[in-house]
Image 1 (cartoon, helix red, strand yellow):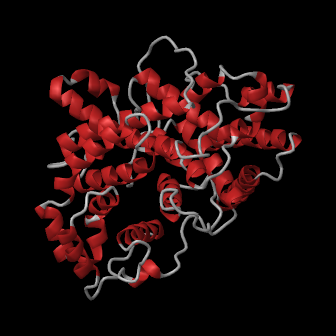
Image 2 (tube, one colour):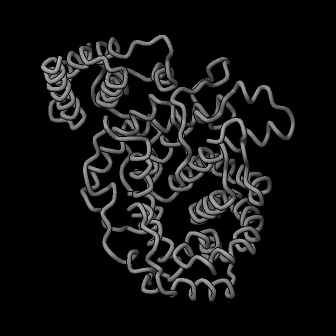
Image 3 (tube, rainbow, N blue to C red):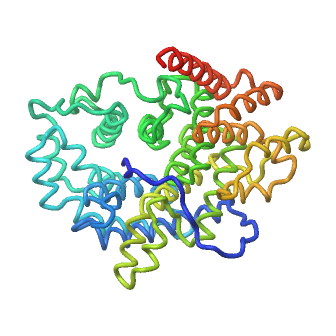
Length: 438
């Protein structure tokens, strides 16, 4: 499910700022899930046969196999809450549209000729089977392919091995013995080791979010995590702060999934991140990504415009559907408010001097709606954004002062502060080496 690389900065159509929306209510979540499913039906109708190719920007190209597999995963995630408020109708509609493509001649050929990729080819079929859309003949072929010699090839990223394990569990009803041995072995993924927020690449963050999805089997199993849940949640929140400032709403949605998938209580930063995500979607009329170029969109007309909008926003819209579906499960919804037992302080206001910019990202616009007590509850979250911003700008002098400010707030034991301090030490060492060489 890796999206393509993206530009960092994103614009949303100008307009009056809407009043706060009761975005975290069950009714609102159901509406966003229905919207994602309606969107999925259109995406399958337009792209499942031939995919989508953007000659001007190849990053927007969508393969039919990727779309089909991710639509199947969306349906699987929506199924547990499908009986709520008319969602079942949309699940069934998308499933009927998807089934012929999930079991097409091309997919059958792939299962036959590439046993090591059999589960990849059959991903949507496996998800549809879980929804009651079975195909016993396809199952028999898949079992034969999975038992073929040489099934351990090719080598995969760890989170992809976790994906194979999830699919094998679904197909075998928990029995992975027919799967390649690499799927059955213990695998070390991005969840096993601490993440350095300031050195991680975008693909590192996607490896983290996907490992959470597959390790928890999209929240359907209480599988034991390789580290303490609190540590993993704290890393997700730090990465969330970074991605909100980058306005990468694809990753924002994936990171927010960490809370409902691990059945954890939502943190203040996660609740705020969800607010920003829904606010952007409501203002723009869709959930944009940095791949959505508004200048290009304005030049297109008719079907070309619709295809471009679908193609560039489909993954983010799907992820909002995943997020809404998981949050609708019992006990997993975010709270409607961000609570703090303390009012805002001078330190809260002082932090904003490190966040001044002429181009306010959406989270900073949304922060204006916060009460002083909410702003105080988010102090560490906003401080993490400030650290990320100074490092991204290579403003190490400002970073030095910011770290000292964080220490005065009692943040010296926070991993983000430690990582920033270590970075400053490396910068000093590098400057000394450079001086010696010159």
